[in-house]
Length: 330
Image (cartoon, rainbow, N blue to C red; front, top):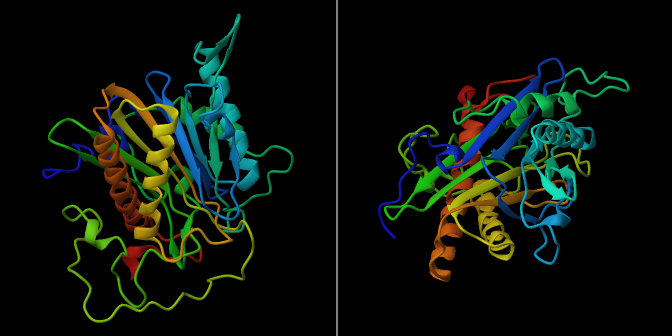
């Protein structure tokens, strides 16, 4: 299909019926991002990292009863950050949003976390980590426009030797297919080719969305980078959401998440390591009927490209924080 181009915002919110909120703890150098669809939505998930941290992802299995979710949370804070989903759950429940069980209303809020506990921020929170509060703040700050880089779950993130961040991108087809990606880039692997300023995702760039550099010259260095810090299990993770307006069931959403995960491989080298908890959610707002499996394939194809671009955009917009320099300092 020809004629694919970014939506008006070049954000995941170019998919109709989606809003995003962010909140940060500036002293802790950490934060939370929440995506909330206007109506309960079908979702799937793919986990390929060797050290994931998640909540409620089993509910997304096609064999499980829950048929829709109310929000998806991406958070810093490692396992402390799982509490962000509780904050989102409380805000949604107070408005009557959730899965109805007799007279009870239970919001379904899957979540994934990344490790940012040793980035130099003040984590001396004792018995009161900030993440439940951050989740609630993010859920009350929903909108269709939001900044990239050092914001939300991307505030304390890093990408190899560079500062990581929150990224997003979108694509829209002439026949109305909308696809977007939202990602917090906190990878062990590198997003930039060794010895250059070129992103690994450079072939997929639209316009000058992450620097507008020309194609890299000369042979590509395929040497695996040395770690910027001593190796430690669970010390990284790139967590992402892709979304579409195409109507999917849970099995089809899982297929889109699986295809979209290839966007990580296009933008990060190496990826899915034993030290990452890479997790990709896929969400469908269901506003455009699914025609056939070729259309499903198109959605997955667009999602992978959007995710690769979103990763580069997150790093491109990130500013230097602590010992991790921003891309623009290269």
